[in-house]
Image (cartoon, rainbow, N blue to C red; front, side, top):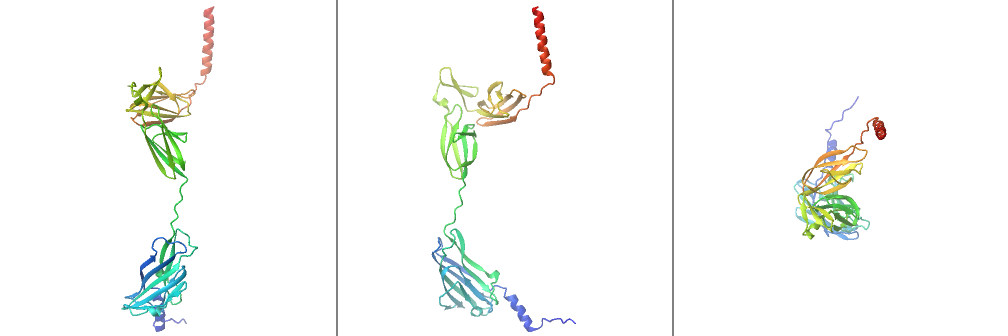
Length: 364
């Protein structure tokens, strides 16, 4: 026969009420302060103060305890208990923990119970600079001496200076020029045309050199320290040095020596960068051979231009590319191998042989 237990027994009700109430926090922490409030280093002496409102409308459980704990070296605790405005100062005590018994704080619900506390101690020498260290832990202990997690409050402070983030070993350089399309050299190594952003540049002093046909060279020393450094250059035309220069078809023809001229782009013109795979193709602009891929052709008047790539063993490639004034257009393409007609070589050989026979017959 199973006997059912009734909860009407007063002892059981008291036990149940004990376990329910013991998990409820009855205090709050305010007026936290650390002196000095700014820089604190290992070995320094600090003063930590705070106020605990142990009861205000709800009485502190008399069977629980209020505990303060610290890891500071040579701690000294000073505190007072204020009940309804009447302060009772307690003697200074040492130790890593200070426990105030619940019967000292357990008054009526309508009573106000306040604990004012001050801790003086030294930051342990083993504290790591740049870390935040808890100076005081405030908690409520239940009747069994265990801390109630929901009641734990800590007063923290930064120890030493924060550790600065490590500086990256590489940075970048953003290069622009007016006009654009200038050749960019980084430490004498060719890297491309402006505007150009150079990534993964090792830290240190780097030399940027800008070259554009018809303009004076520009050299800049840039200190890269894991960041992105801007470099902007206004290119000066060499034509400005020679008043006898003549302008035709979007370029300025500048006499250099008797019988020699240099074509310099002028406002209203742009440039074209041509890259082919494989490289080595002849580049024709509007029917005129301008270079061999990869190549950059400056001084092209703004507008559409016919571009033809010619290379032995590959089919000619023809296209039309628009050029904008003051900018560098880029054309990248692959060339297709020329298709061979089967038997064409044999037919050509026979035709050549027939021609020789015909010549011989004519001579006879």
